[in-house]
Structures are given as C-alpha cells and as structure tokens.
Image (cartoon, rainbow, N blue to C red; front, side, top):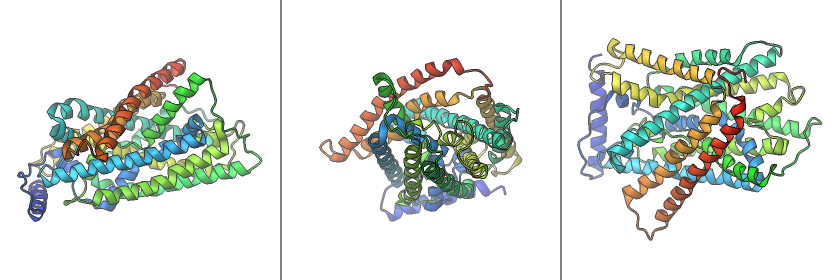
Length: 464
C-alpha cells in the first residue's frame, strides 16, 4: 500500500515520456504530480468515459428551460441561437483539446484550467483569475443543483400528497444528505459508471418531456398557442440577451481540461471522440425538448417546461408519468452535482493530502472525509437559505461561463499556435471572443435587472 502513489506517478511519467520519444519531440521532464492531480484527476479513463463525463457536465436538467428561451426569441431566432451555440461550444471545446494535446507533446501536460492559464498567459492569470473564477462557478453550480434537487423532491412530494405541509428547505436538506454520500467517491474517474447512468437518465427525462409536450399539444387540454414575443420593446430587447444567456449556460461546462485530464495518455484524438458522444446526446435532447415544449405551449412556456405540465387547476398529464419524469430528473441532478464538486475536491486534496502516502491511508482519508462533507454541508445551507439562487447564478454565469467556455479557448489557441493574422481561424477566434466579451457585459446587466425585478420575493429560507 505504501508504494501506490509513487507507482502511479511513475507509470504516468513513463507513458508520457514514451509518447514524446515516439513523436520525436524534445520534451521537458514530467513534473511530479500533486495530490489533487494524483488522487482526484487520475488519468485512467478511455474516450468513452470522457464522453460520459462531458455529457453529465453539459446536458443537465437546465435544458428544460430551453422552451422558455424560445419564447424570448421566437421560432427563427431561437433555433438559430440554439444551433449556433452548439456549433460554437463544440468548436471551442475542440480548440481547448488541441491546445492540451500540443502542450502534452511539449512535456507540459496540463490537468486543470488554471494550469493552462498559468502556462499560456502567465502565473497571475491562473492564480488570480481563472482559478478562483472556475472554483466559484463550479461551487455555485453545486448550490444551484442542490436547490434544484430539493425542488424536484418537493414536486414529487406534492404530487403524491397535494396538501402536504413540508417546506422546501427540508427537501433541500434531504438532497444534501444524498450528495454527502456521493461526494466521497474518490476520484473523477470513479464516477464513470454513475455518469453513464446519468447520460441514460438525460435521454430518458428528455424523451418523457418531449412525449408529454406532444401529448398535451394534441389533446383538448392544449393551451391556445401564440408564438409572438411578448412585452414592450425594452422588455423584448432585454429578453433577447436573457435568452442568449440561458442558451449559453445550458451548453456551458467550465471543466473541460479536468475531464481531459482523466484520459490515459496519449490523449491525442480521444477528446474529439468524447465530444462526439456528448454532442450526439445534446442534439437529440436539446432540440427535441426545445421544439416540442415551445410548440405545445407557445409564449406561455415557463422557466422550466415541467411547470407547464401542472396546468392551472390540475395536472395535464397522468400523475405516474409526472412522477417518473421527475424521478429521472432528480436522479440526473445528483450526478451533475457530484461532477461539479470535483474542482472543489481537487483543490482540497492538493492543499491537505500527502501525495507520498497511499490515497486510502488514514492520513489522507480523514481530511478528505471532513473537507468534502463540509463543502456539501455549506452548499446545502446556502441552497436552503437562498431559494432564489438561480437569479444570482445567472449573474455568475455571465461573468464565468462565457469567459471560460467562449473566450479563453479562443485566446489560448491563438497564443499557443500563433496563427497568421491573415488566416481565417485567427479572425474566427477573434470574432467569437469579441462578441462573447460584449455578451458578458450585456448579460450581466440583464441579470442584475432580473435580480432587481425579483427582489421583492427574496426571503431567507423561503418556501418557493
């Protein structure tokens, strides 16, 4: 047991060195891995495992808000934005992968987003900007998922007991208890089977939502459909940017380097295969849910299409069907929560674990158990206290998701490969980064406006 950690580092270094030798690249000697990289970001996965991780990090229940995004853009604008965001993020994540592969050939295998920023842009970028930004975005996603899990549990409870008196914070606490158990999974790679189930659950609840929307649309319970964009000119203008932010957030990941770090070297070409797995699920689920939900409810589509299924007076679908759909959704949210805990876990392992001791030694297990449990407890408390956290997360998304997924990949590629300023790829990357930078500002303004509009409903531990 005492030689487990050194052996793992030796195998990783030997594999990387052999790849450099085969490719004829003069590489720097590999650095000894810290505990965060060694224990949490184990490089043992295949491209298929990578596809599972990518799908869970991106294709989450947030996609159920896509019909609402279409109410702010209309048919043409909505479908164009949905397709364009998919193409841009697929391109962006592939650029990140190419940069990571290039750095590996040079002997600088980068396992974290902050490592990329440090090596490509300079130490300050990794330590003071990208590292903290990614940490708080991912931890914010954990809080948001905990809140969503609690809301799903409450929804299931009210379906079976309409007169029930239990409060939202009680369900959030229950969901936090499940997360507390799952958070002890030792590494990102150990989530591969959970994330395969998550992928299947995503397909399942999306199929249920699509079928439910089509059923309602063809029934006599169907609402009067109106596809015009509502509101004044000012409201419609803000609505456009709000919709773009929603769509961009549903495609966001923020942990692409950490997912690529789980691949066993050499990594060349594996991430692209994983992205193809992920985006085959995304295309299937995003477009089916968005189109069917907007077709069935028009501009009456709510923030999540599941709310439309409840109707004004009674549910528009059988109770068993709604229960099944929500159980699928709830189960997938738990997997998403654990995936976004990994950057937090990695930071804790790096600071408090000893890479020279075995991963499951008492020296490393005790601080791991305490710190991971503490992070889940804090996230659960925040979710229970701030049931309006979705509005706050929209603001974080504008400042965090867009820079990490739409801007930095373009900058990393241009700085690393230095394409000619006369080349198409240079200007495509520059255009995407520039437009995304503008969206950060406008999205932040729209998010603050929404917070101000909703402020009157804010109350700690509110039963929303």
